[in-house]
Length: 334
Image (tube, rainbow, N blue to C red; front, side, top):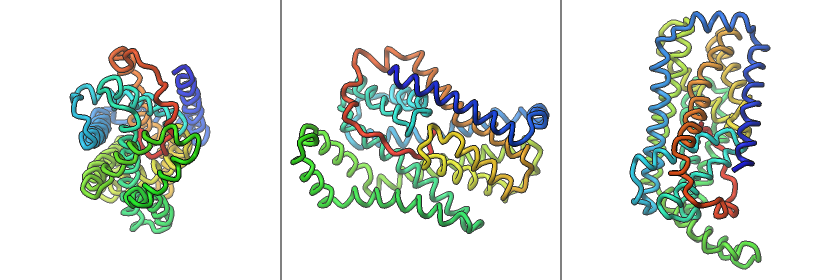
């Protein structure tokens, strides 16, 4: 846990550096003027859309837990587990979010090997949802289509491989003969069985639908940020905002950098200038505002929940059961 806290601190320092970099790229004085002139009455709606995103993604998380048989956890307790994990968003590859598996063990007495696929499936389906949104935008801006197709294809292939049961069981059988793997072979079987169930077509459709609507809500939040900075109401700008938010977040997630810091901000700022035709000052200010209303809001909320319900979440357990778990792939989730 001390190591995770140190990584969070490093992530915060990196985040501050990114914000300073935005100010240097644009103009601190002009950005300050834009912030003063911002229509702050839109802030509750912007934060509200972020909350909608979190609740829809939580619904998917809770749905997945029920699918693997974890039914002795209330909505309220599970919500604290899900949101509390956002406090570790700034760890490399979001590895810190694996602590959610420890919390689930404490609260529901379920081994991390069984619940790890929930975290994996949540990431994969979020990535697929955002790749879909990126592809829709790619119809308007073909230059971005190849990148969106590549990321989406990688995620879909991962799902398909898991669903080819003979291949997966053969690989597990080979692994059982290896000295190190054989010691955790039974856990790997539990992990695979959960992943196989979670990514079946019906469950996949439910999860991707929830994820798509969730990320559309954050795209609309970016649209409201632009409206607050003085851009006129326009349906095309709203669609463009959803595309830009999705594509930049996918790029940030694929980078593996903690929280996508630097990559997501660069994508948002550059695409707003290139596609929306705004100045570097408006683009940088909009990026600053939307990142505070989404990623940084999530980190703050997660750390607050951990502080208030620390004993409830951690109980008396330690992280020994997480030692054998691999780092999950990064995807665009705050």
